[in-house]
Length: 473
Ligand SMILES: [Zn+2]
Image 1 (cartoon, rainbow, N blue to C red):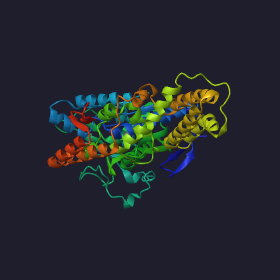
Image 2 (image 1 turned 180 degrees about the vertical axis):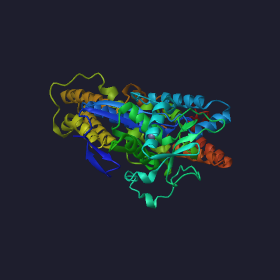
Image 3 (image 1 turned 30 degrees about the vertical axis):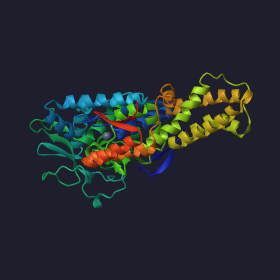
Image 4 (image 1 turned 30 degrees about the horizontal axis):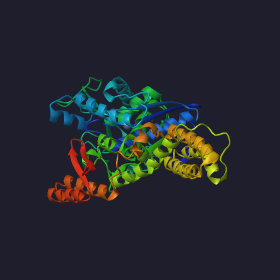
């Protein structure tokens, strides 16, 4: 009934978990070293909807999402601030969850941290060494890529043609440039744990193999992450898990979400073009941000702009207005009939079949807006037709809320005139000023601020980013 696009197969396949009726999901989580941005919210919201839909279809779902809480970027920040790496990781993991909970995301069943799973990580590395898949080189341990013939099957790359990937640690002791670190020997000032290979810390890839194994067993039904993780992270995870655990395939469906970009460039902290998540939630409200993230299919890249988000807010106000109109409507006795009546009646089926087809939230949203158009037409007609339509529209919004998470209580606020919509041309100027400021072009930023003022709006720079208000507010 459900089909899922699997990156490894390069095609949509019927969904069949290893144990009928039970689904284990592992999603690669964040590395908490800075404030969360919109790119972090996308997988959280996408997997929240996938989990809701699988549960709706009767599956018992276990969702695991990790925190990579030991990493070069965390250690670097801790050194700069004179605090421990654990303190940095805890602070930004908390900031991430505060923001994600506002988006109506139900917390995963398990949220393991790499540093809380060192014994499982060491156990896995020891198995790989014992089987000849890994070797010690100085104080580090490496995976012997050439010993794993299926290497490259996920990313559809040929190891012979592979250039060394993005995160390659130079080490003359490595047998092959393709080999990647499982264990990194301790360096002064860095966190370290004891192990049979000497003191050190885990490499990035091995933690996910270890935590997926510990919390879900040797086979994972759905494994998620951004497309930027396909190579080398997930390729390495397959090699580690399948070699150590004699399991094949380790993952039944690889599910990769598209990235959030600005002007086509990946939104990331290292590029400093991230839209601060807390700021967007304050400005637009969680219901609008969540709906916007789901307005495109999860595999499609989302090219973010404030103007596009503001457009979505205007569209979303129709959801809120309809909910205000029908929230107390009783179920109608007779269906309203006619083409619009049919759209209202058939909505729950259309919604679920959109999600059955590779969790297509864009198609689900299209169904919601068609349904709203039909409901509004019938409500305008008045009389018994309108009463029947109101009952069905109410049922349909409840169904959509259950499937997508419309956050209806908060959504009503969106429709109220107390939050005036900022015109898109003003939002475009604000975005342009953001870019000018990022490029340290202060004269241009000041000129844009004046231009925004001439249009009757005021931009205030707050610690979490600029806020736009009416000039007379
Ligand atoms: Zn991972």
